[in-house]
Image (tube, rainbow, N blue to C red):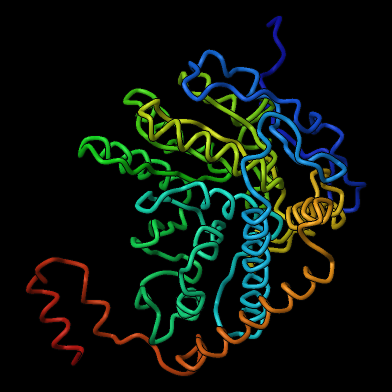
Length: 410
């Protein structure tokens, strides 16, 4: 007889299920301002502790404290607050449009607005983002036209992508927003390759790759880390840990390992964790990592600790796999409320001004929606031309496509 028990696999399980009491007691949240800020040219060996902590700037009294604070003026923080309010208003309006049957699909970034909005402000013109489908804030916090985003969601006659992409998979080379891929993790590989090409050309532009916690289990993630670390590519690699993939909790992607950021250690890469619901902390860390890449000091891996407040998409019902109250129990709070309270505490903002700004932005989004819908929605109005599917694919159109276009009469 064997002295061993039969082999078995370990399958990670979330601590709570629908109907249970939400429990985030296992989330170790350090005191705001307590995490050190290393020198910009520090060696990767000096970063081990930063992959296990969480960089925070805003404390419980809405004060900005610690070595990562004081990187934004009140005026810049107000712009950041406005950016987050705008993307939340846009999300709400497009979610409603989907429920009304005006588009087939939508994905919010509810609760994660600070990450993309703050990161975008740390970039320079010409830098390129390789985003997932939850970084619409990279566009809404620039002067990219909201109406163009809506036209893309509706796939109407004014869709800048001519109906070639699923709704919310935007693309704009001019605004440093590479085409979104529905299959996540591919963007990490592309970001590293683009950054390597920029270095080969002797350019000064850097790249930023984006991935969710669930997709770090994909082979593309690890391939990207190999190339980024080996060639010291000028890239910032961002992991948005919002606790849930489509319907599986973060433990499925990382098991019981300490953090996602800690995975950078195996590649000799500087790795940090940051409070993803703290606009000031996100900006400070992004600015630091971007500066490091631009100085030829190599890549940085950043894990943003946040929470997906809404469903994965309009096709998802999160109540089937997590407690309904879990979002309210998230200990890092709401990014908009936290920045608002900080500015009020500094006498740079007020509740009245906040209400007025929110109403103004919601009105602007509504007006943009009305204009976009004049060009059509999913089931009514103008649509891209059939001819568009043949254009812009090849530099010189192959003969078989020419014949197909002629047969289609376009």
